[in-house]
Amino acid sequence: MTPAPLEDRLGRVLSIGTTISTTLLAVGLVLWFVVGPLPIVQQILAAGIFVLIGTPVGRVVASTIAFVAQRDWQMVIMTTLVLVSLALSLIVALDK
Image 1 (tube, rainbow, N blue to C red):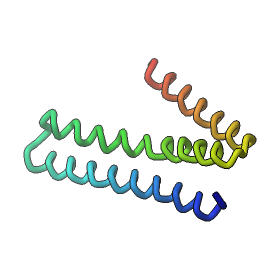
Image 2: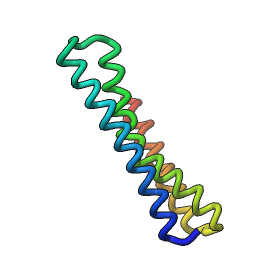
Image 3: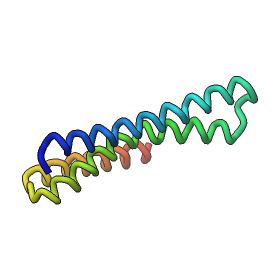
C-alpha cells in the first residue's frame, strides 16, 4: 500500500470517529436540555466522549495493521510503542 491510500484510510478512520462522536454528543446535549439528566442521556454523552477519545487510538491501531501488511517493521515497532504508551496512560488514569 502506497502512502496516499494509507493516509486516505487513516483519514477515514478519523472522520468516521469524529462524526460518530459529534453525533452522540449533539444528541446527548439536545436530550439533556429537553428531558434533563436522565441516565440514558448521560450514557449517550459518555459514549460520545469515549468515541472521541478512542478515535486517535483507532488510527494508531489501523496504522499498525497497515504497517504489518507492508512489512515495515520499523514503523510497526514505533506504532506499537505508541499503543503501549496510550495503554499505560489509560491504566494510570483509571488507577487514580
